[in-house]
Image (cartoon, rainbow, N blue to C red; front, side):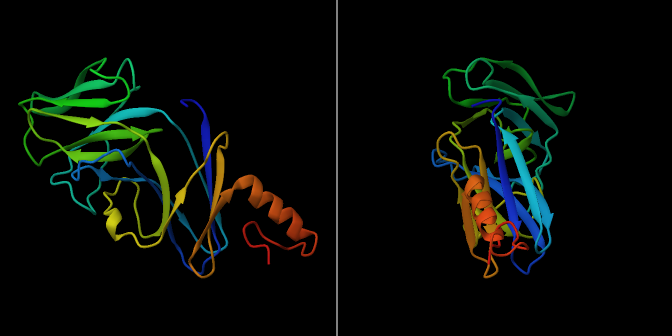
Length: 227
């Protein structure tokens, strides 16, 4: 639902310092060339908590990445607001040698975001994609005379390590992550990286309830660490 704020709290109960990285996967994107981006990243030292907030507001994005591959930084040069019904198509072109979006309009089918790439595009020079809440989520290598199509049904994931926001991810190489499933009518989740580097993911209301109960026995109990 556009406009509804989602919150994800990350609690670092491990002994590691690194970056909490939230990214998206999409079970309905079957194009192997579409790559996930490090959507949000924040550094976190042991015992700290960081918060991520977003709304489901889509956009079109592009970046002059060169060849799109894991480790490349996707820094959006344009971020045009989009919706899934009336403004879900845009043209990607060159004007005076510079890439740009233009001619945003209603696309052929609601529910899909279309990027029409015209014949001015130079292969393997730029990438196009979609974003949510102001940051890129998925990207694909830009090619001339091709329409890139995205039908978003996002799944949210979190991992921890050495990441930078906008980095192109190889999600097959991420070995420690956790799915964040908000469920129905719930908009706040907490992901805890435990001392043994496993994950605990639960509704924030449950985390708060556990903390209040733990403090009856131990006034110094910490959020996500109740023992």
